[in-house]
Image (cartoon, rainbow, N blue to C red; front, side, top):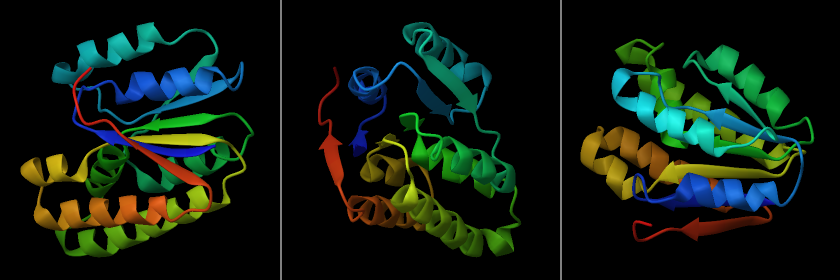
Length: 168
């Protein structure tokens, strides 16, 4: 299974993805991308409490070299993977780049990510905000990158796409 779930913030995308994956396996991988900032703690804790012992949670730290090697291992260990917050993961990775290198870094990160997803041996679901929502809060160049990344993910063999249009 390869699935991209998009929609507005806090509309139930993660819960839908979790429900789909729990029917597949007893060993599930949740990749958390939301930074542990004070304004996110309640949301993070709610997500953690909602998942049972079948889920192994991994938090990314924004260091792309470290995170990529971890992602590579997780997407190829045979357990279904839920990556929650693609845009957040990419945005956090840019914090490690100088302003002059951000465009180059964006291209590299998205290329490696698409290649990883295409060649993954595990079932996976990617959850992300709708790119139009991202356009309202982040620079337009970043919006275009996320929009293009979503388009590239949708071209991966066997991919299905679910767009949640309303808040649950």
